Length: 355
Image (tube, rainbow, N blue to C red; front, top):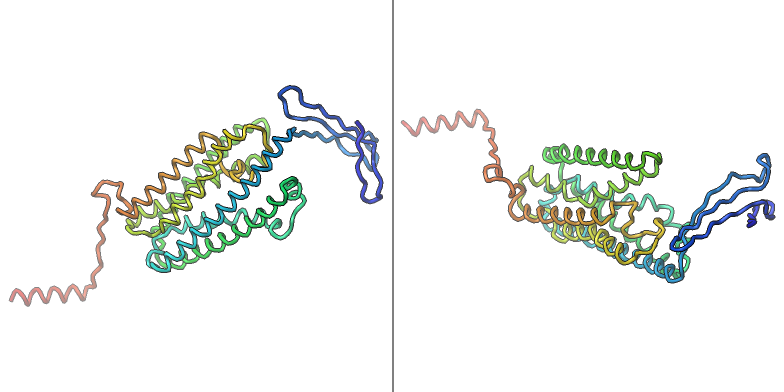
């Protein structure tokens, strides 16, 4: 069929365009086609051939997709609001027990802060204005999706500010107590690097025939999400090095944050069973496959791993950082340096006592 495009400059139409579509047959749902110009290649209005594809939606599937998007935005809003509440509880807890700030891992605080900052950076423009793409997504949602998206960004901003304050308090409290933190970094950083390289290797093998920089970037985003899911790992390692015993973290904070991080994977398992119809990948708002590892196997592994980390940190705060080690490795002996003048004084006292 013939297509026309609007030429904004001259307020006229170019109808020398051929549009071809191949409609799906049977159970297929993918529409394939192309758009090409019928003009000479030397013409000003000529353009290269454009391949297009689209998924077909029935009316019920469209309503289901819109309902799912509204639900996912609400779930994101609830998650970000809860994160703000949990971080606030940690700040109030440290206000009552300021001596515990030094026992918190800076690496963990940095991971959580970056986890709140990245979504804000990626959507910075959308916070202050409604972009064209955003309007296209919200068609048919009665404005609920658009309103909720604004609330989501506000909640994310509040959580980021509170998390930044928590990171600042941790950095100030460290001062000259960086020994254990550096030891923790020497353990965690190589593991993160090895995991990232392994992910890139697997991603490269899977996309060997199609060299795509976007797929590599998507893999890095997913790995960053996995790192954020295991945010308690640096704290666990730090507890081992400093043999800490005490509630450095409020139970509300680390248990609540773990709950918020694992809920998308639980929801993804439910979504895989509930929404069996095709969906556009770009319409995923909660549990976005481009921002973390989502599959039935990964969902189970991440949920189990997150729960194990939370339980270990809970036991460390109850019984000590090395509770899982044999008894002889649970404590370490420190030798105190004594001044030589003090030592001579002790020797003189002993001699006098003997006489």
